[in-house]
Amino acid sequence: MKRQLVFLFAVLCGVAQAQQPIGNVAVQDAMVAGDLTVNNGRAVLVANTTVTAKDRTADVTLNRGGSIHVCATSGLHITSGKSATGPAPLMLSLDRGAIEVQMAATTSDVIMTPDLRFGIASNGPLDLRLRVTSNGDTCVENRGSNAPILTGADQFGESSYDLRPGQHVLFEHGSLKEVVDNESSPCGCPPAPTAPGISVADAALAAGSPKQSAEAEHPFPAAISNGLTPVPSAPQAPPGVVHAQVATTLTYDANGEATDNTSSAITPVVQPRTAEPRHPSDVGHWIGHFFKRLFGRG
Image (cartoon, rainbow, N blue to C red; front, side):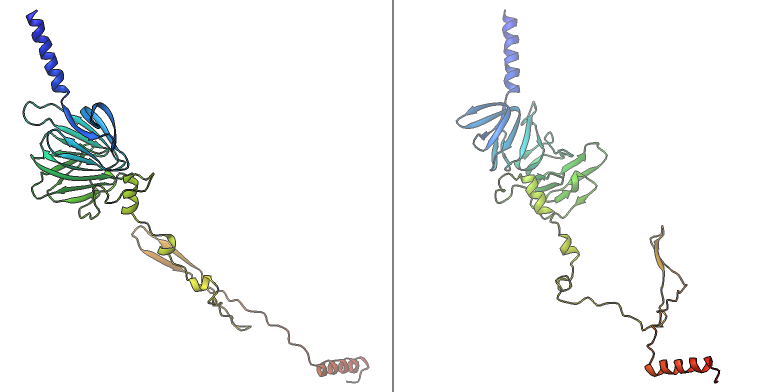
């Protein structure tokens, strides 16, 4: 009986350790899925939960100290591990949208996106801004001169990138091989709420990738198109003058050089002469000459 009580106590202690709360968030600011309880209007996050912010930023208060700001319309998966000493490690997984993380990070913590995985190289104060747009562009800002180095790796582990303290970069389409290392756009929550029905991921993509219209890239002369300026016509040569017609073909070889193959043959095009009208006196002279030959007088 005594052994059974000891075993039951050990099991209960293990369950209690496994169910240690991660933190809490106001239910009015976010939808929470997973293991949780609700207390005084706040959802207590346990073990493995997903926090999806509504139309405003949802602030997650961490039991280990620090906080995570889940930006409006963004969804964050939070998973807690076990640790014999020190704070329980956290795995933060952001699908799309943006988050801001302020906490004392440990080498056991992991931050993930659909394309990348960031490990913590050393313990230190983490002040991270992270944003993932709909096309996979991943903006990361490792703020603070004492921030730990973040080691990024792709899904296949073929590439890696060390994000040093104070570095602000953009991984285009989530690729470690397409890095903008002097990114200037903010990676965290937008200063103003997005329009209804527009997610942070889509809004950031639209703001960060302005497209010039075809009219701006290839402007058409407005005066000509509106009929304000006459279009000059091709000059006409006078009758009987030979025109030179040149046949040319532009080719592109493998060395990247353009070649102008101009034919040396010139085809003369002669404009036909119009018949000049005869003068009335010329007609009479022609008739007289006809009768003269008819009657044999000349």
